[in-house]
Image (tube, rainbow, N blue to C red):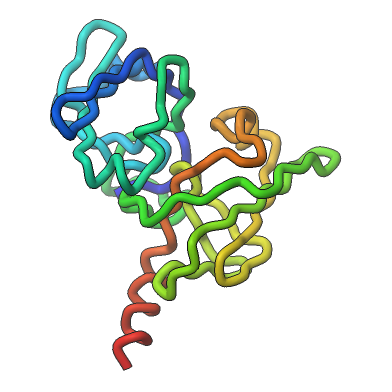
Length: 195
């Protein structure tokens, strides 16, 4: 479980195919605090640390993850939003995030707004993938509040801190991102569709 509050930016050092899997080597400010078998959200994708070598650590993504997320597009130098799993008893500053990416979306708007930024995202329409104005959404692992919402698009407002301390500062129109829709909304949508 995660909160969607990004701890740090990591950097991809290398990627390598291993059969249908993808092994990724990264550096992060907190690599020395990691342990093998620990869950870390990478742009919202919950992945297990499988090896640690000095200031670098490794993760492995299976084909399902590669097909459903943007991880297959990562290359050396890619900045990745990182969050270690939450500790019981800590404050839940964002919202409940599972690290299970539901879909990808494309940035269709990135606009500076005199001290903040507005981003809009378009995704494939799906009755189980819903957003609501003032509801929660997780974009590349970042817990955000939806500003405007439609069946296949939503927008968010980004404050300067989030813009500077996540990979939002590198996003431009046409870029792909990972989405995790609000878990409560997903259950409600599933219950409603069963009726």
